[in-house]
Length: 307
Image 1: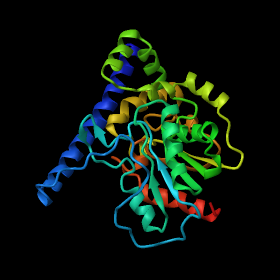
Image 2 (image 1 turned 45 degrees about the vertical axis):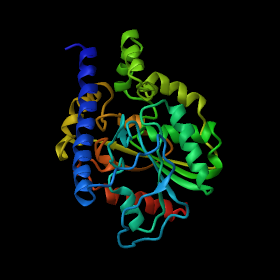
Image 3 (image 1 turned 180 degrees about the vertical axis):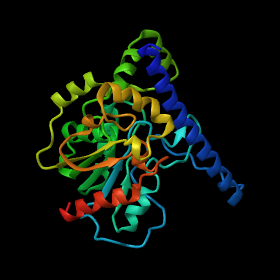
Image 4 (image 1 turned 30 degrees about the vertical axis):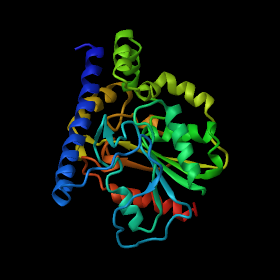
């Protein structure tokens, strides 16, 4: 199988897996809501919702909270609807509730799910500024790049005490390199445009574009930049089957990885932790990884530094 065909298979499997999981979960939640309130229509969410506190019931209080609220910034594909249909899933699965249970104030950013880093960064900056307080951003995957650009280009540095990135492709990913080549093929890109799909975010995280991004996007001097590096230990339990092909491809091209992003690409700033978790397990999906203990540990470290 040629490398081009291989990457088509990998990308197709990833997208199909995510959509299938979201649709199944949406159907279950919709059935439950109809059982509880058969005549109550589901609300229509706005295209870009403002930041909101997660409304789950808090868990018993544990350690002292962070000095500043935590903003969770999602990665590529963090959606709550497909077309006119409400999907209704939480990108950070159960994580806001567990953090709130430890006494932390938590907000969730909503940015265009598949758009370019620039569009997403602009949306993130507007939402954080609306809070009118300094915050600690914990960002997964592409969300870390959104936050870096928001700090550098959209004047957010005075509102952010720290940025912690998890599984973020700071130096790009070979998966996006192949997607970039496909996207620049006229017929492929034209088809996506006609479908109204802005998937510029995929192309933005190629290794070539991230070299340029890192050259022109400087860190804010008064913000703590930290990272968590994730890679899968196949001997300890392995990677989710929908990420297995991507993991195998990246293992040959770039070494240890989480199924989407090479471990070396996740380095930016101070490394706070190294974990055995694939890209989806890092946000509480499909994994054997104790995601709640992991985020509690991150928040505790921010609290210890009075951030």
